[in-house]
Length: 332
Ligand SMILES: Nc1ncnc2c1ncn2[C@@H]1O[C@H](COP(=O)(O)OP(=O)(O)OP(=O)(O)O)[C@@H](O)[C@H]1O
Ligand SMILES: [Mg+2]
Image (cartoon, rainbow, N blue to C red; front, side, top):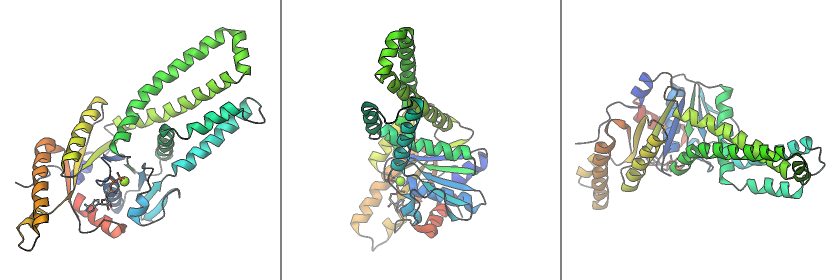
């Protein structure tokens, strides 16, 4: 028995016409960016205005489309097809500068106190900052509303799930700081003394920043859970680790109330190759091993499988190759 797709990607879009946001998740290096690009290409070729966005700190859409996209804003690649790849470091630096300016204005300071400056500088190293900058850019893009479809090439699985938990943790944190802040207010004089040393100013800053980050996270986590407007596809290949990763991810998504719209199996060696006489044993063994995992994926994820993309004889790069992947995934 060979793997089969009950309802494919095109069927999905045909029966979910309200979907606007499309997310591709999965373990590193299996094809998220490639399939995001192919999906954006397919939608654009059907006359839809699409933006594909990379949330990965590593520039990758630039590689796949063979164009300079990183840090360039919305880059037009073809009719209706746009791509954005944010420079998170630059956004963090701009954000820090904004905070400095706000503090100076708010507290009528000429220079930022050293301890506050230290705090601002150290915050840039937080992984949460890079994520926050990414979500900032995502939210900005979505709220600007210039496109009919937004395809988000998500960061590898671990990070993507982490932010769902982060929203809850931040809620509790903000709550705690507000309580402490109120208590400090009750001790009027003592608060003034602390305030003059800059601690309350710093606290205000932390609180503002947390609330800002929380707002972004809430927006994204609401979007991710919105079944009507959001599609979430998970990419895997027929190997053991990706299967285990997918199993775990699906469990976690269930826990976080995220519905997975489908699974795409990528990089599958054509089974027919195995029966050709001139194919080396090495490759035959690889194909046999893959086929066992293909069966396993079939029985474990069954009707969730929405696409099967073969291992191509070269890396799909450039519009022409991406259109080929789109044809495979969506049917030409
Ligand atoms: N079907 C395929 N056939 C051949 N090569 C492929 C196929 N799909 C993806 N590749 C190649 O595999 C590599 C990984 O793909 P891609 O960059 O899309 O994965 P990713 O999940 O985005 O990775 P990362 O987690 O590093 O961002 C790339 O070099 C890509 O060109
Ligand atoms: Mg990628």
